[in-house]
Length: 473
Image 1 (cartoon, rainbow, N blue to C red):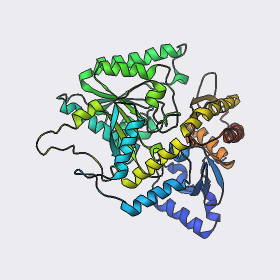
Image 2 (image 1 turned 90 degrees about the vertical axis):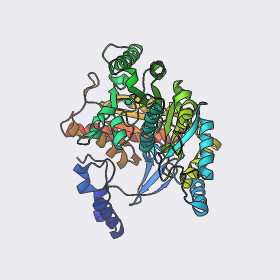
Image 3 (image 1 turned 45 degrees about the vertical axis):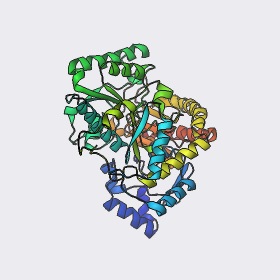
Image 4 (image 1 turned 180 degrees about the vertical axis):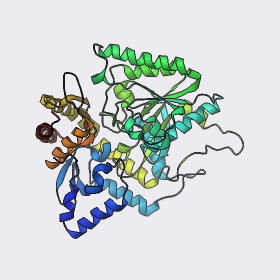
């Protein structure tokens, strides 16, 4: 039984051009999160075309995109309007520095638009090139902020187990997924991890309300142990993404923020995934979770993946300190060559225009509950222990035993098996260990949801058979 989701070994029997391209990729491109146990033999699938909710590989096979590229192609593939906006800006002025009191029209327009869409107190935008860079830059600005306030000891950042905040040196440390940092160094002296908010695996006999109390108490105890004077910020995804699409118990985020506020600890919402419609709103923090973060980070859906772009939205209170000159000749000495890149900002402006014109957030609010309901019907499969998430951000957790929630052994590669069987049937979903994530373009309809659930139903049945045949069930 072949358990990888990759189909690329057939490239060796295809046309010379496809085989040559496959070989170049295998020989020279170091892919993010490469599984070298299969890559050396099979290489990668080459995705060459895309349109709407579909992508197509080099062999001409078409797939439903069940992961929106990577949480990001929110308005769907092949939007000519976005491509044309980027081309127009690239031919007019592709790039010029935003250092030293220089700017460009798309960056200025987008900053104003983001301020209008965000909670009312977040009126200032610092641009980066993606989610990792946005989170990394944020921590540097937070440390600078407290240094300017004369509180240089406030350096520690609180994150959570199984959080995902990026893969730069610092954000890899913020990321609490243990396997992400195997054999990599981290900056543990700057970061303390709290428990994840995992309702499926909460302590036996504990209600969700009691579980919320338990998690808030852990935060309070951690602050007591470390000292509020040593803690700068708490960073949290409104719903955890790559760590398992974990939805916290009701009231969790409000209560965590209240504890932070009481201890002068900044509250950072990592909305790299949840922002720009995935939960039915441009920003989920206030609209869904009733929180008012000091900082919101976004990327991915900001441009629907058409161009790399990240943004850090900063409160008026923080900006007042950050924007005060250090002294004669003192500047805010941080930023990137491509901060406020005009082509990326033009893509984001057109992306937001499409989302508003086509009521894409409203589509998520309408179709999202149906996706939740239909995916929940897959719980009848022997290996599906939990179906969780919200709106267009969903996850299946695969287990060996539903009663005990025991996991299958790693070598069973259950997530890969499900993804492979789904891909064989024309659907791409994301395997993450024993999990399978569904995070589609935000333009799915009820009809597409029905087609996807039918494919997954067959894929899960085939997976159960293969696990049994290989002695894992």
